[in-house]
Length: 156
Image 1 (tube, rainbow, N blue to C red):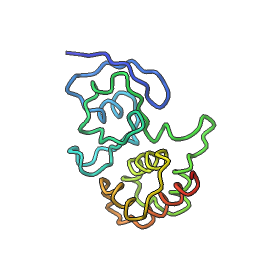
Image 2 (cartoon, rainbow, N blue to C red):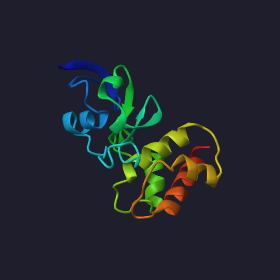
Image 3 (tube, one colour):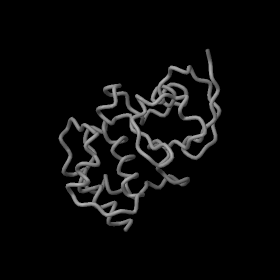
Image 4 (cartoon, helix red, strand yellow):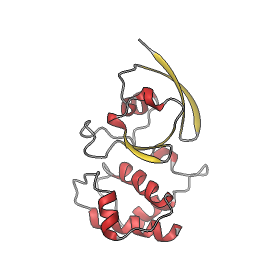
């Protein structure tokens, strides 16, 4: 059985044929070639597959593609401007050397984007809690926290 869904992905209207059992991760990677969405644990524990759906972070591996109907989805490919300029969060990650092997980075960038877009101020401990759904195998959390703080301070 095939289902057709309409949604907006990285600012573009899409109409996609999906299997109703298909995860959003599989749809984004396999049908649209958005490989920043990583397949890690596939049970919603590592954060590698994080995307923004209507501005909120979700683990796309446990989010059915059919639930994306009429939603706006952002992946890392959608963070850069039309002219290719990096977002403030991406720049902060580079400036603070928060990118090591890069596997966790796309998910962390999107969670950091949600944090920055919230318009709220957070303590370092609150930020640590907010990114706790992401596993960084390179143990780069301090630089990641520095980058999130830097991006927050630039926006506020």
